Image (cartoon, rainbow, N blue to C red; front, side, top):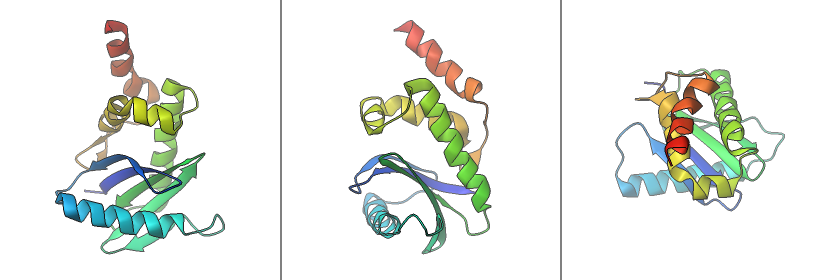
Length: 143
């Protein structure tokens, strides 16, 4: 399994989306998120986007006011995960039109659905934006 968790966090450190692909208790998740968010938000733009924390490698990227953080195994390819983050942002941009924090907050179920279409059990299974968005567009038409 490659991806352990995906977090979307704002500049104030508030978690807007959290998806875990391994079991952690609520207390463990809260502690892990707090440690990782503090560590990543404290870094400046000149530093690389990879951080080792506990037994995870954290790959992160900032887009506008949101930080996209992905926790992976130590043997995972960092550049591939950066590409995954970029694909996730592009997919959300295509659906929401320049995704922002409010889009995630008001359409959390759609953001989770996009992520679930892309990642299954910690493995990236879909990279086509149109294949990811087609079920969401069908649901939008039904309402």
